[in-house]
Structures are given as C-alpha cells and as structure tokens.
Length: 328
Length: 222
Image (cartoon, rainbow over all chains, first blue to last red; front, side):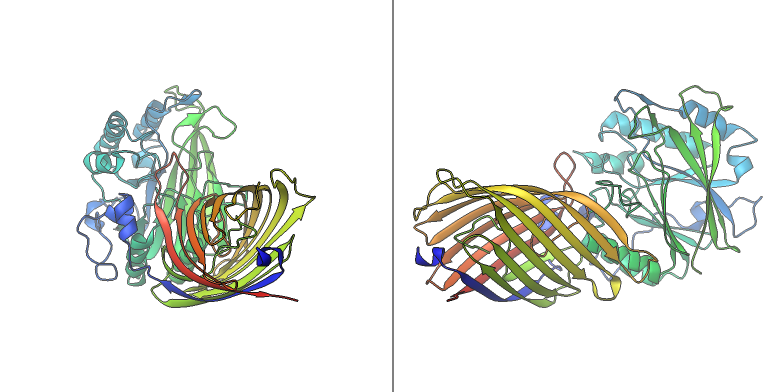
C-alpha cells in the first residue's frame, strides 16, 4: 500500500500495432457493409460493383446531350405510424404526371432515393416502397436507392435485396457524371467500402457525386445526425477534394435543406424527408429536382414542398435552393 | 491502463492490436507520462499510428473532500486531444465532464465505481475545406473496477472518449482491462476496447477493435 499513498510519475513507452487489414470482427458481429457483396473479391483488386451503366438510364432526347435532370427524394419512411405524419404521395403523383411540371417538362431522366425507404425494415414497408418505385418506373424514372438506418434492422438487408434489388453500395454513370451510391446506414462508411471507394474514385475521370444516407457534417448543431468518426470524415473530405467530387447528397435529417459549402467546388446538400410531419424537429413533405449542366459545371437544386396530404398540386411550393459548382 | 490508486481513469497505453476504419497495418508507437499525487492527476501522451498521429491530455481534479464511508469524490475531468491524419486534415477535441468516484474501502480487495457526464467540442480542419468544421456532443463514462489482493486489477468501462479515441458525435466504446502488479514499480496488463458506429436501438457496426498489452513503469518522486 505504500506506493498507493506516494506521488508516482508513471512513464510508458509503447509499441502500437495496427491490423486494419484484419476484418474478422466486422464480418463476425454484423451483417451489412461487409456482407454487402457476398463473395466479393479482396479490396484494392476489383472496382466497386456497378449496378447500372449509362445505357440503363435512358437519355432524354429533348435536352442537350451533356445536361440532365433527376428527381431526388429521401426518407419516405413508408407506413410510418407516428402522430403528425402525412404523405403527399397523391399530390406528388399528380405533379409528376402534370405536363407543365413533371417528368416531361422538367426533363427528368431518373430518380435517386437517399435511404430510409421503410420505417422499421418490415416486409410490408418494403413492399409499399416497391410499389412506389414501380410507379416511378412506369413513368420513365428508374430509381436508384441506398439503405438508410431504418432499412437495415432485423432482416432488412435481405429484404432490401428482395424488394429493392440493388447492391448495398454501387456506382452509376450517366452522361459523364459518376454517382457513388454509398451505404452509411450503419453511420459509417466502414473500412471495406472505403477501400472500394478509394480505389474506384482514383480511376474515374468523371465529375463525381456522392449519394448516401448520413450527412457528412452539415452544420455545427446537427448533433447526432452525422457520421460519427471525425477521421473518417476528414478522409472523405480529402477524397472529395482530390477527386473532383462536387456534391455530397445526404438525407436522414428529416428537417433537411442544409447546405454546407466546403469550398467553391465542393458542397454538401442534406435533403428534407419525402414524408411530412407536424413537429418542430421535422418538416413538410419535400422532393427535389437536380439539374446538371456540363458546360457550366454546375448542379442546380429546386425544392418542391407540399404542406398537407391533399392531392392538389396548386399549393406545391417551389423554391430554388441554389446552384452549386463543381471544382473542374 | 490501470492506475491502482485512482481506478476508473480511461487512459490506456500499450502495445496493441487494433483495427478501425482508417488505420493501416503499420506498426506504431506511443509514449505516455502520467503524473499523479494524492488528489489530482495529469496524463500526456502521443501515439503515432499510420496514417494518423494523436496527442492526448487527460486531467482529473477532485472537487471538495471525499466522504469517508463511501469514498465518494466529486471529480472534474478535462480532456484534450489532437489528431493529424497527415495530409488529410486533423481534429482538435476538448472535453469537460463532471462525475463521481466511489471507492468505499481501502483494503487490498477494494472495488470502485465511477461515472461522469460532460460535453465535448470538436474542431476539424482539412486542406480541402475553406473553413474549419465545429461540433459539440455529450460525453459519458462509466467504470467499474475491482482489485484482488492489491495485485490483480479488473476493470470494465463504457465511454465515449479515451485518451486517443474521439468521435465527433455520440458513439460508445466498451472496454475491459486486466492487470497484474509484478513489482512495486512494474505493472503488466491486457485490455480490449471496442467502438460501435451507432448507439443501441440502431443497428451497430464495430468500427474499431483494439487489444492492448501494456507495461507500466512507476517512479516515486521524492
């Protein structure tokens, strides 16, 4: 006990061995990111799985060949039971089919969903989302989605495969722009996915866009709505800066409409939820149209807001969110 | 790392085997010095672990006198941390927390329990962004420890931070530690630390797992 009452100076000289190549624990404890591509080749060897290529997204003959627009929505949380929740799906459909607004007028060529297509990964919720996607498909909009944190619960990853039919993370290419659809449903990119991303992005000469569920940063008071690991965040920011990634699209934060301009050519946009809720922490139902101009090197974002569940399109509010530049 | 007369301090230096989202397979080194008297304690360390280098500081200051029966002590903890991810940027974290230590007996088979709650601020910088990124998050630390004949020490912990591990937002790390005193000046220990990507109710993903073997040399100052 003598030394317990003394005044010691403790010195430690340590060796630190890092074995990040060893991913046994990740595969052992969870499914999801590391189980994303069953039988996937070793990292650094193969490119990211490509879900679709340019031929799978039909070009719109009415637009200049290098420009295009797409529909962006996030967090539909289909069949969410909470109080104050409403869906503007009928108004959205009417808007989409309207010759003055929808697919034809806005030159929409495809759709992107940023996750949380279900509320709790249930079978019926996935089935509802599938019906919605089939509706979009019937109107010429093929939908590309990534999982959110509400989609990976229980058998959620398996249901994703069954009902959505897309990989957990993948790359799209359309008119010289690469969309990296990344799985952050576990609130991290994870080591394996990051390695895929690093390898794929380094060999890609296109302008690039990251699409994922969790925001990267957004703003200082976005507590608990962003990726947690600051080192991972720094790595992603550097990947974006080094590889001409002009946009980082995210959802998760239902209130949304957060814009973080990291520099002149690198912007994060956090979209608001597709469903609405009467709550100070959430907001009205929203969807977005993103318009890419190759010659200007810009992405314009227009928001469509519907404040109730009525099928009327007259009260859909249109707001220009801004035009954001790619670095080069 | 175990500090037998002040259990519950989440400092830990070591030879360790670690896997996390960012780290490479390179070997690294860490050096930590801890000064401690009857009341306060300060630890200062540096760890180089490619591709990042971390500097950690940990200070514990008792507030008021401890209760004799329960060993109840109110403790203010101040932690600072800097991280450089080489050319990719870096982070500066500062955490202030308030908590209680309980250590009711001073026998050779003592046990202790401690907890603290606080707030952490984070500043991230990168050559690719025009302005640093700021953020704040709550912190929590809960520790339970047991000594056997003042020779073998066991500890379980659940915390958001450690000397070298920080997150910008609330995520938890589970830790387990066993140490054995082999002389008055030498302590050898084995510890494990696991960080999850998200908190319970969400589907978790292990983003970091670390197993450490450490040796501590203690010098009693005059």
